[in-house]
Image 1: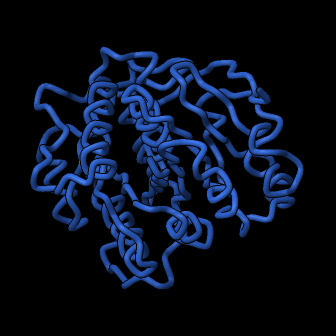
Image 2 (image 1 turned 30 degrees about the vertical axis):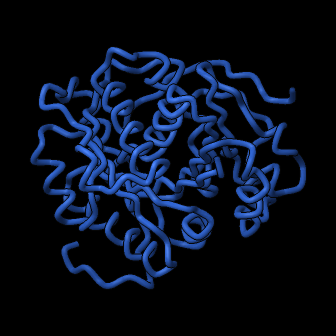
Length: 291
């Protein structure tokens, strides 16, 4: 099959964008799709932090001409490959960030699915990821500011002639959260993910905590992604990936997420104004919080 590049995008920090990119990728591996997740949030990379990776060379080193793709890749348990960024400010300064799309084009054909974790800010980094992607999956919580900012990313995608495959709603309390987010975003919702602060560990939920509601939800969302994007099934023929028995497990996850949701994001100057506001490195293990 031809490689499908999917940008996972959202307009607000702390909504679970990176976690969703990683777990969707891990779930697709379980569907026998060779998948690579690339950190495209070059100014605020946190993939290696979430996975507690010991990374000397990452995406920034490739962009600085100091590492190959193989040297910047990490193989996780379960078969998923990730290409994390680097957190040091010097790494960002040394990288030619405008060349990021060249990395994605260079690895086309090396995997069935390439997932790009984008920045929460609708600037040049996000635009580059959206332009190189074949489809875009929006990630948001149901709260108003997050949905409105994510709608900005949807409009930006449309202005770049991109295709929005749908939305994934995180930290879902009940079905009304999904319905509300879908109505405000004006895109089909692929599924909802409940918060679950018991499902943390040194690997993606999909390989570490398969019995958690969040892992089940990501598995169902991967099934819908397979149908909608990889099999080209019409949206009206695909059921929403959410079970009413899935509940938010753990007040700690929500409290943490609410704190991170205060992270400011830049406005999109092109959007309408909204007055409402081999050589792979070793995986050493660590905590992967949901939000």
